[in-house]
Length: 206
Image (cartoon, rainbow, N blue to C red):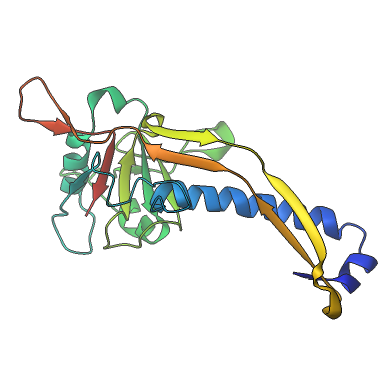
């Protein structure tokens, strides 16, 4: 909702508002792809109905350890190793940056933005987000191959404005919307040829 005074006195307002709304839509998509419940929105990787995900118990409550990472990696399907990435909540950053192996080597590599080298954890790229659960809760760290996450774009995005909703208050309503759906492709953990070991393209730390 924007005042008509602002719109009439700042010629760039409409463009700026449109840009903000498009950015907000992208952020909303990301949040839905990660934790959407499938009701009027995509089904996210973290949704409990995603029975294709493997959930790993952490070694120490509210902590992330080297052993947690190794177990998570062992639960990732081999075909996904070259495509998977870690997704971590922003609050895990201090813990992850301080992780070391038995020899005292840091497991986190900050990368080099100037050379296009991504930050990595155990050699796999990592992204930090504020859209999942904070440190110590389910999903604060995930290992995901997003090529096994299906997204279907529908129509839109559509950007519109109306002066009628708050006409007597001299305000204009802007809105943006689109049709999109998404869902994890794998609906159950994959069993290897040994008939016992199960792996998945989505591994979640509990």
